Image 1 (tube, one colour):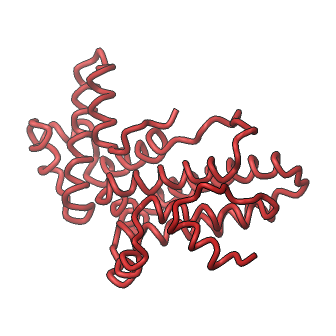
Image 2 (cartoon, rainbow, N blue to C red):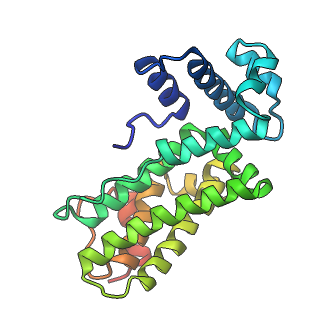
Length: 242
């Protein structure tokens, strides 16, 4: 089940409080992971130091190296947990009676909410992915799994035999979402934010507008729901005439 709270740090703290490991060493490692997440969120990967993490966790810097080789090791651990255990795949046994736009919109709203609640960590994903090949492979694996999941759902619903074109379309749409989050949250683009303000848009409007595009590409024969917010309806009418 996807966590309701979009804050990854809150998720880590609540998990530790609710299910503390029995072994002291494991608890200390979890505290260091939380501290690393906090420092990375505030400072970014490039400016973070092992001593910063140890100090935030309330342990000696030497203790940090008992659990992690260096700051890169701790960062990979934190960000892999973010990708694999927080940004989770929904169940394959999805409600097939639900209108596909609703499922798409829910996923896109959640994705933007997670980025909004964890902008520093999302920036670290980009920073470390550019620097570390092993972590870049983790990101690619996560994307591959997610895109494959979406493509399978579309193929099942539409009764399509060849999954490859659908998977390719999902990769294109996913790349659009990644670039959108860069401009909206991770590395804010002033011109884009001004445009959004002129459209009286917010994060939900962005998620809904992108969901219109997802629906048109993946489910071209499906109609949009009638109760769209006014700004989204105007957007849909502008780009999808008729």
